[in-house]
Length: 207
Image (cartoon, rainbow, N blue to C red; front, side, top):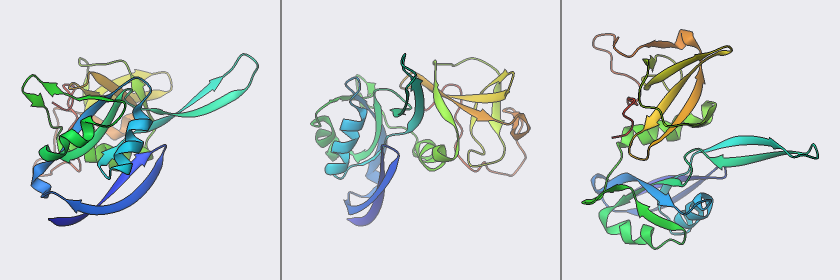
């Protein structure tokens, strides 16, 4: 067994903890599908059970009829929490109240590419990201600088600038991130012999 440290992100906070993990090579990221509005509850139970997980959140402002403004932190991917586990730990995940299943096929749960989940986990707090209707077709672009350098998605232009849409085909959800057009380049262009800083989010998503 190897000693490892993990961080869980719930309600925007980072809580470090340590435990004995199974061998690193046996652990993968999965998309855990929860009952509606149970994402934070499930993430909290993952933390109690010391399961490495990631619940990306965004800030949503809403104004009631009486003029009161309410600020809430909402799941960036509604009904999903990402969890990194070994095959032996799946039963512990599925026994969590509010958990429905691990996303996959009839043959079992499908792992997500680790580099792409880690890129989101390490960089989302530095960007303004919001949920977006699932999008798989459009003009491809790559972010060439900043914390998300190397990530690919579909670029959308609007009056105030541009945003890039990152789509996760496995869960059929997308997010949009505000970007400067000067920080984008065509996805087909790549400087020879220079590896991207992070994994590529193709319009096909995390498949």
